Image (cartoon, rainbow, N blue to C red; front, side, top):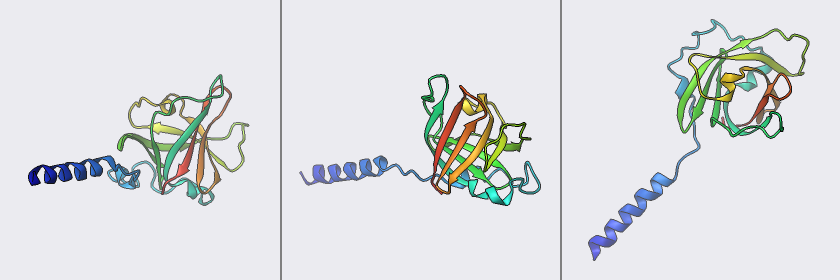
Length: 160
């Protein structure tokens, strides 16, 4: 009887540890990419360096019906020197660089007009439509907005 009780406690503790999945994502997922891989210095101007950090996807919008699409990754990591990574289920599924673009008459104030240049193909909407405006409505939220109608926007909240 004592052995059964002890075994039950061990199993319960084990299940609790497995069930307590953390929402913690680390910038270390991109550590293998050296800061100077894409650019020798940071191309993002000082007024926009608050974009750097870990951002959790909170939703999407846009498209023909305006309702967005089912999110296809969990986190966006933005690191100094315009390095980005996408995380799904605690795994880095894609990475690359931001390429700054010339604003051709379309203008979102307080935003960065850029292209997400992926190192390898990825099965995410952002890979299919990589030209976006990155906006910081405030320090705790970030939007990756489409440049035109019927395309998709992604909304984030700051994790780190």
